[in-house]
Image (cartoon, rainbow, N blue to C red):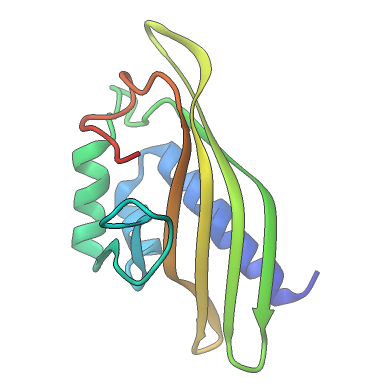
Length: 157
């Protein structure tokens, strides 16, 4: 594995770690330079330039704090598991793309351990001043279970 592959993979893993810790400020910092959205265009089709994307640290922080429930320990009681990572890195251009699957597990009072969401990430990265960072994160939701103890607002499907 190249240094760039490790760095990009670590960004993907860091996102899961931060969100499961309930560190939405950390998530917003991680994605501050990225366009983030659900990967669907206004008509509901996947991908495309007209997908709903948020930009800027404050908008991204607002999305997480307004939609994701946190419990007294400060966490959402989740574990984000990311698998099936496919990387495409262009070292010369300082750009990378990744596709992966994600599954969110949750166990909180009143909800036994279970998968509550599953889908795919379509990510883009750029190398700036020698360091890799997210430039885009699109998420596509494929499966929805009981999100009643996770979401503060309805999720787009």
